[in-house]
Image 1: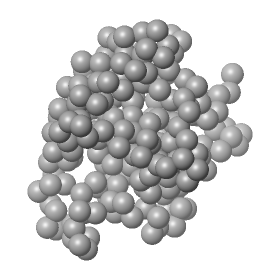
Image 2: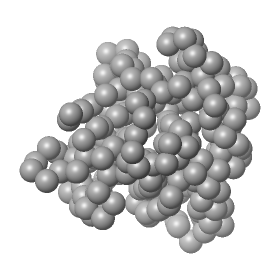
Image 3: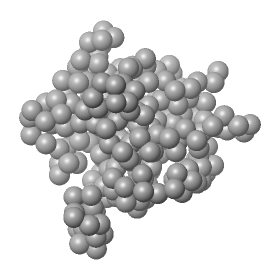
Image 4: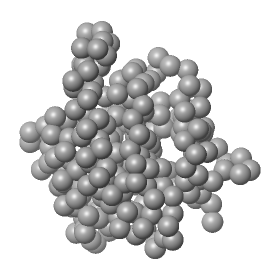
Length: 233
């Protein structure tokens, strides 16, 4: 990632913890460079575990997730973390326009030059629908502030999609997070309720192995991998 001059960055994630899993180290690196990073989390992240969505009975869990998101953002140096309340794992039940409008509103408000979002082929339906909505909201019409769009991988979603079912995550952009890995790890620990024991893909051991492997692919200690969707220079 080349040096920046106070860039504005918007990270758009489906659920609390996706932003750290996908680009936590990169958020920290942007912060270290003096960039203004805003995190937008679209869905509430808990009620899909219920037989039927009941936000009232999930109130305590949702409150804890909100606190975890704010704590993780603080650890990584994000300027702000905004959580919306779209239904967890049900974004495919909504009109895409409803998602697009919310994203467009934030783009107009924050005027980011860079946007990070989920990979289009993830097994999680919210990730896929959000990717589509962000691509629409960031369409390159005159006056669009977004100059670079990158999609990130999320362990336990990107690699779980069977070959041929959707586009594979084939990264062409790597960010060296050797100096930021420990902060990413701390941010993951803030989401203790969302982490899983080894050998789950969302365990600390697996996530460190992924960071080391992505780093080894480009000759650094640790890295995060992305797919460059669009860049205007």
